Amino acid sequence: MMQQKLSELVKAYYDFRGLTQPDANQSYLFLVSEIGELADALVANQAQWVRNNPDRERDISAEIGDVLMMLTVFSMEMGVDPVDAMLAKMKSKGYQPKE
Image 1 (cartoon, rainbow, N blue to C red):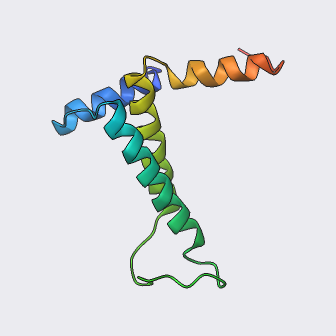
Image 2 (image 1 turned 90 degrees about the vertical axis):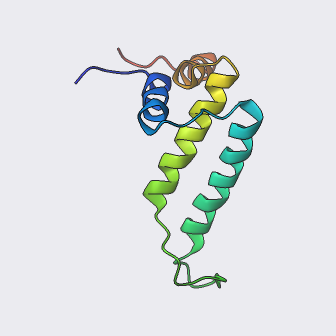
């Protein structure tokens, strides 16, 4: 399979679904919302937390996917490739990933 950039993969998904890609403001707000859903999924099965809707299905893997997708859309809208940004941050801390 051809290696696609994360941003290309997300754009292809939006095209496939016939969806309009959110702008920077919308994608940031969606990102925050998805992070909240990920947090809800994380605490849902922890005994010390009482959930308002205990019967609602929560899927950590799906929520991670949503967070990654919305972070990617936000990054694209800001003109930043998310993987390039991560690698640059790692490099700034002295880490050089192996090719």
